[in-house]
Image (tube, one colour):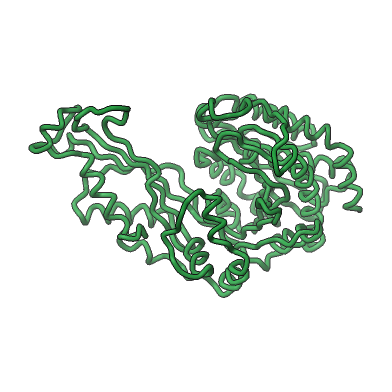
Length: 464
């Protein structure tokens, strides 16, 4: 078994692989509108079935976007789960795109060279396809070292409502897997692979106040009557302002009770990260002028990774168009997300929000919950974590190992529910996820496929 030969195959097949990836990217798969979802799911079903997978489409409900699930059984002793997402965000402002958002156009861009521009090429449809092509390359050589459960979902951008149902239905066989892989373009702009051992959870909710619930306006009225009539907008603003302190840190009653302190392993990893972490550079990446946190680089990282946050994602009320219109709106709504860290729970956080508002008399604030993610975390000492580190080094790169990511993903379904350790890694660089002109560096896309094959073999060697 030779990794070099597999990598040589990927080099030889790369024009075909790139063409197949572009073909898939050109099919829209916007989960929020459903555009192209069914066509993409059917195409993926064809692709994985041709690879020998016993694959089916799973729907949690009649109108759900399907999960493409199936097993490639090569008779190996070890079995892994490979998770991917095929849905993408809406295009947004079409005029802000330099090229058609589903044109999969390749252009020159400094300092990267050739880049592929398309919605979903960064997050994360292209990486999903690249991982399938790497698996196919190994299987075609009879050198796929492990059986593979494929789980490809089309609702990640909606919070993954169908994924738990699929995993629950298949729990008996999935829980026997030895590890789970999620592959993505994992290098930063400096070419350093970033390996995250965990993700924060995310509780997302809509908070709504209607004037009619307290005898206020049932429809929009003139703002001159605000001297007499209570505003639901001010009511909502006062309610959500109690949920943070003056530093905008969480102030929901009891929210800190479940927060676990970072472990010795976490602290050791943070100390190592702090040596290279550049707050000024990260501010530039975020296009902000300052952080609300002051202190050492280690202090900033510890807060960033191990503390929860309460965020207003959007707030809507009344007249928001150009010009003036003096009105008192009949309702107000805020979309909020709370990031969870170990050992916070989704149910516990929801209850704390409700009780916090009740104690302050805001029983008229209606809360609508959406699909939420729990936190997830694996040890750096797991074979799957060490195999990811070895993979980066095999390709001549020293990775940054982060104990946690500030972002969220549905990986709690693996370690928390199935008891299966996971990793998320891969070479290659991509950018502008969710934004116009989303891109991936073409040469990195090829190296990504090679890194998938390398990780398969490094993990198989460690776990044999």
